[in-house]
Length: 474
Image 1: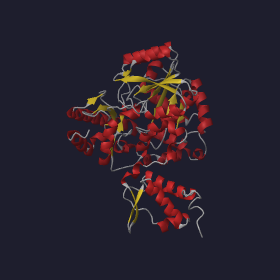
Image 2: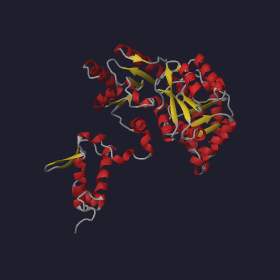
Image 3: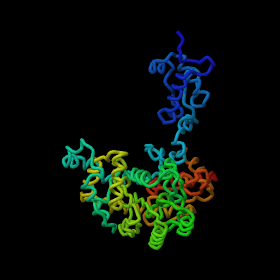
Image 4: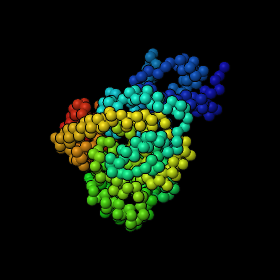
């Protein structure tokens, strides 16, 4: 009996064969089947999916025609070397297609590849965070609130953690009250809430450029008009900012004063005061994202500290200093805005994870936290010093020379487009973050790369890159 899904009257593969080919192609793209892997036999797939053998044959024919797999006589079908770059046409359909230029690096950040050197990683090495292991605190979290862990939390977030944050921010010189703090599902939810609240489609906002690639993607999805403010080694280019403000009426300026992503630069006090003056004159709100606050000295210059949340919205996170798995961040702002953002959070996300919020609160109240920060800053300072010395030895140009920077923005000698350098390093299991990703126009070549100083300690990177440069490959 013929399989009705095997062919169409026009001779084209039927929807069932197309569907099976798309499924196997997606599994290959996701790495479930790697180049050189043998696929299950025709009989095994037919039995697994309850298709006729002819349907599986038609699906394999489609994959062969697309270059994803190849037949080997007497052995079966194998994934080809070029299949890893195969992408189904529907992958970029819809609204997400407007942000695909930023999603690539996000996918790379979320991959778990222990054997790879993650030079472009956005997180510190795992061993730097090991002394804040979550298993040490679980029992205390359960003992302090077992009953409430079966319900949604407060729209503002767990009250004791907000009280702990009041004390933590006071160390920075930022005076707040619990009613000015809204806990979020990481700093990225905080950015989402601010965008939803302030920015209608078609509105104009400003961002650092180069800047945080995921923020660019969020703004593109929101249909926002985005203008880049050039980033210099001591903060935003205030002359360019003043010129933009004279011509435009932006609602917000998203910026990172400290440990800027991707350049690692810190704002100077003089420039911070100038930015605040311009914001006051042009009725501009400043959104200060500070995910690496724990890596920096408490006395470091912050816009929110100078302004005391009059014209600033301060966003923080524990993903980099505790654990990205906890996904706990926060917004600090004036009390009226905090109430509105808490309502918006309840409407969109109901609440955060009280378990995770309780976990962070326990970690903050334990004596290990202060010792952890001391070790974290020491490790970062040592890694930054070693990375800067290595860059100098290789004749690289470094954009900003902070004493403590998880990221360094570097240009390698003879490299005009860091995207090519990233491609050359990939077969050596070294993943880089090319400068294009951090630009509003990702098609423009960039000679810069974001380099994680913790990953630069890996001897494999130090061996591979100089060899490529010496060979003239880069």
